[in-house]
Image (cartoon, rainbow, N blue to C red; front, side, top):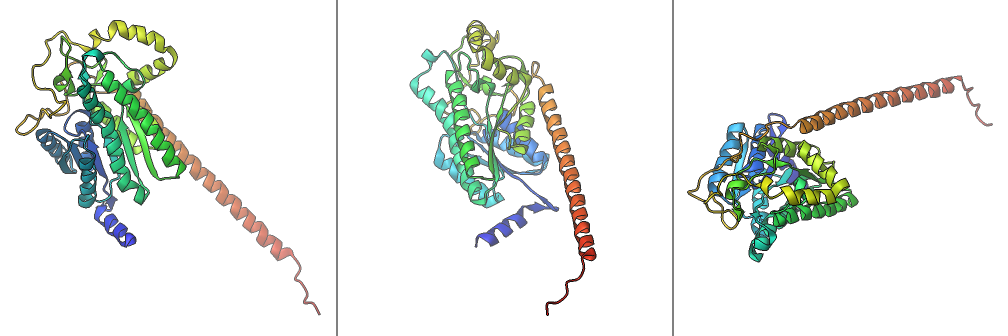
Length: 372
């Protein structure tokens, strides 16, 4: 019976009097996904890790366990819908209902559009866009029947403002915005308790810049300023905790880019035409290792690359913009709770006064004589 299943699941999910979250993260073997997995591990969550590379998955699982959570690593290519759905079913079977599903996995090609082959563009789209569609579909398959859950799409400032040399990636990120807006309005129409939101990211120091397929003359890099993946991860967790908002901006550069695009897009076109090539390349020769477009670079017995890329010396470990957003939300929640409490007290006092008036009126009214 559905009712008994729910009771068993809730009992399974309680630990020391607290409900344990079950969180699924795609692209969990490195970068933002890896850092986010560790943060949920610190919450003692059950973390399901989806990625292709076995070495990175093993490292991510160890991170979660060392942080205090439970880990379930599953080797999955998010471009394979059946594999993603199977992973969702396994997560549900082993850890119980999925509370949070986070789509992070992506790949890219650094090159002018005319130098990207059709099958390469297709592959980027399948992973970086359809991977989000498939992940969202799998998440909804487990969340909608229970009428609860949160989906977080990890987006980018480049989903609003495209830049040169990343046409496939920027196209996928723009598509995620449109897709997610459509799904969100459908959930709102149905008065669903399932939420979907986007965390828009700045440039982040992830390993992708060392393993991405690149046809640039120099080593690719994120457009400065660069943030550490832990900053992005805090933004993802914050979005998961506040899914009622349509989207969340992480980093001052994300906010600035989105606002500038709204008011000065033609100016940005010309600016990026002048600066976009050099700002995405270091002065060093490009890496000679294998790219991860078709196969994971950390396949067994590969190397675990961790969450960080090679730009630690330049990356910021904090974001003042994110801190302000978090504190403002906390302050807003406090004010809201205080307002609700005060309003409730006022309503209760008014109700008591009305009750006293009714009782006083009843006592003063003469008794009705029986009709002969």
